Amino acid sequence: MESKKAEIEASAQQKAGESKGAKQRRSYKRELEAALAENEMLREMLLRTAADFDNYRRRVQQEKSEIAETANVALLRKLLPLIDDLNRTADAVEAKKSEDPLLQSILLIRKNALKILQEAGVREMAAKGMPFDPEKHEALMTVEAKDLPPHTVVEEHQKGYEYKDRVLRHAKVIVSKEKE
Image (cartoon, helix red, strand yellow):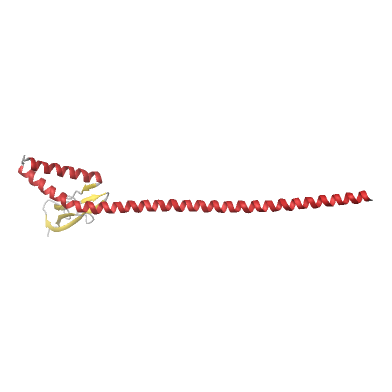
């Protein structure tokens, strides 16, 4: 009888051990699942933070670029009267057909200044003979022109300039009008 009792006790202890081991395995499994869930949450937070930082970096770079662009436009607008003066002087020199070295140096200065502006992205706008465009031209007055259709630029009083597809200065022009 005692051996049967020992056998039953051994069986009970084995079952208790199994249930204790099973409980421990379930506990470890829950801890593992919680750790994996936390890991996934932290991973998602890291990805979001990295994306936010990347967006911030791009936004700051764009703002820097816009600030530089605005500064360039302001500087270029201040240089345009100087270019106008050089153009008027060059026109006077060319009209005289002078070989004076001082006057010839003014022509070279004008040529270099225009080259620098062109390399920076500044372009003269074509106006004379073109249809009037209020986005690019400022009409000073209208005149009747026999050989031109209405709303065509007859004469250009001040050159207009564009900088990277945006108007830096409107051309001041005289426009043809419809015949009365």
